[in-house]
Image (cartoon, rainbow over all chains, first blue to last red; front, side, top):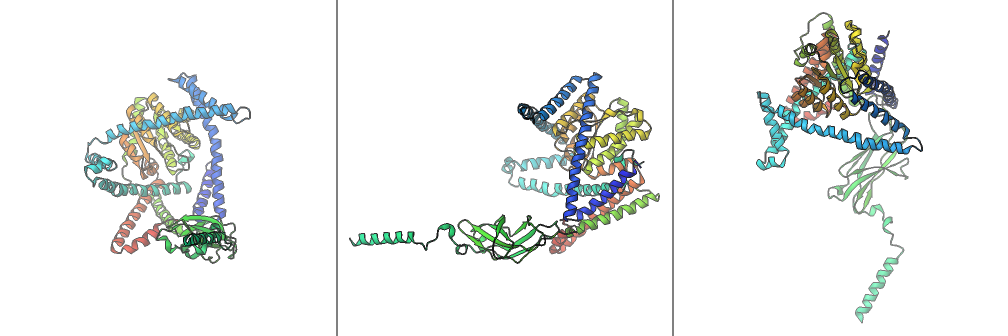
Length: 212
Length: 395
């Protein structure tokens, strides 16, 4: 019964939302919107569990004095401080705490996010070096086509030869696009097949226990 | 002297003309006096395949659009043809239709007028015939999708019944999935953990569900070999589902004691914060094997490059076309697009799942055949190309 009920719910709702896709009426649209709101409510409950997990994970690290355990103290302190400032800052008379919350967000978290994103540029350089070693025929082909595309999108490319941007455009729009569309066909079918497997109860790994 | 008198007369006449009550102010210049021609042939009809409260208005452009005297068109709506028109929308020149999405009542008559707006003048069209909005119960633009879904389901059911009857189904070797066993074994031998990232998307993403299906299979293997497993999560719902999946996998293998409740944990909701956290785990714990399966965005290369630097075997898989090159470059094995969805069937070898996979392959073959036929027909008769494209369009 523990497994039957979720399967029945998935089958019923799966078929309902399949039909809903083809029914544009107001009733159908309203039900869809309500369901979207439900997912937000469920997420809110899940956040409580997630924060609990985060807290336990780092408390265990501190208790067991695992390597770099002091980082966990910083994490937990940040979690508590930000939560308190966020909640208390909304109260009348405690607006200063709300301002501090925004200051910490704008001048600590946002720059850290940006710094992490900026590191991507360096990783791209190292990945490009790895990709552009012409060890096989395919890698050599990738190297040549990548080089032409790079030249095609900078002014220097057209200064070398006026047709280079056209060739770069052709590479992007013909062989590259064909490969992309091929992958997308497969992805579309894969998504449909996975949805079908879940709706019909063929795939039950998501329930835990792999279908037993 | 004669010149002075003539000048005075001209001045008086000009002053009298300016003060004349028959000369209306600029704001009262009738629209019909405008230099531009109005739009014509105004048609209003219910917008098809919607929930109602929408009427589509179309018209013939003003002939003065060619000479660039028209800047755009104002769409006016009224409940009576005699007057009371209010502006409900505006489209720039070049457009000859407008979807009025704010029709107050379904089943009530509405009338439309189109005002051509120029830099110096405006011109009002005639009033359209009455139109009513109505809600529809079936989207006719999705008939093709319905037919495709039914055909696909039939193909899948045929192959599932074949698989159930004991017929062996050949599935080609997928290197990335064949390497899963080896990767788990390597981690066991090295006494290091396995890192499994089920993407950064929510549970509503099919790629996440596919990643969670594979997690079940990987967790069974880690339970069998008693290898530590680390599953950091970004989405709270995905975290709770992943925890259940891993727990049940350990139960199924008969090693519930080996399950560590802390192995599946929540990191953060922040995209780059998550990438930073996983990078930290890779640098500190030095996992022998990294799995990056599911939906990834800009953080894909940050994760994969850090993993490559730590010397881990890396198996990645995503249907995000733009992240695939990064994974191919930095990982040892990459599941490209549909291979991610095939993984669960491939690893479990369950006949029912294999049947679905086979059905998926045959459906792909049907699509390829249709593409070839469509291409050939288009080459013979280019006019048919548009008909085929129209048939494939989903509204």
